[in-house]
Length: 320
Image (cartoon, rainbow, N blue to C red; front, side):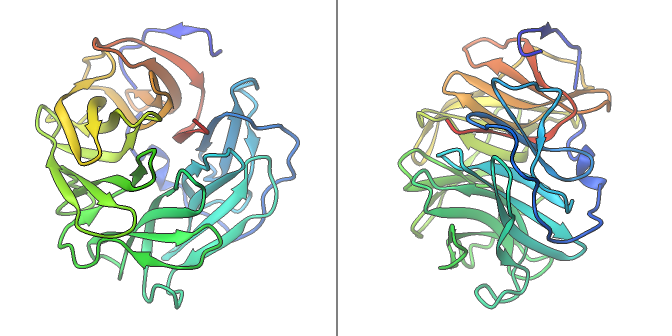
């Protein structure tokens, strides 16, 4: 299916899978019977983590967790591990699972002593050297979200943006590992800026979005070569599109541009993830149907898309 092109008039509503709630908390993953080298991690309606290798069958992905409640998986740079958010009611935790299947490990949970009353975890991502995970969280439920860093064994919690007076979304590392970029704004429902934050702590640099993007729906991600940045921008008609811009370590050079050439208001494009420095994978849906993962080349002109994995949500590609 990877080679089949589909020219669609539109794609999935953001957060379509978000209504699924877990029926259990914790629990292990499956035993690995598939070799994962490079490809997509994602969730399905049962809110478990799945992977499919580029050389595998996209119709038969490997399920890695069984407990449900999983959100926003992210693959480590060596391709061996996935970090994700697990939710059960008002309890959040950061968990990891091997990309080939195996035991699930919990790194941090709501109200752990390391972070006090922390909750609302979202968007965890590995550092390029694989030593740290940076993520967004809330100090208390409903508070403005902040960014934090922990080691991959769950130790060494450090808040990166204390008392910033602004909310932060899912972070993404520049290849150097020195800086992360994250959506920022007055609340989680209105990220109208980009924040460039030192990964070791320090003052953030904020950049307005401009152009036709009113706010970032879910994430902004840096390309593997560090030269471009992609985001899912919400438009004035309420739909979302993937936009790409030229990036520096503390800003965007010029205006962002649309990735695809679809214009219908029913089209929804979200959760961008770089498959290479010249191609993006992302969630694509039309008129509220089932979400699926598509790919599109990144160029100076908008393009059509290619189906990659059917029936999937919140995709993340790696390693790259």
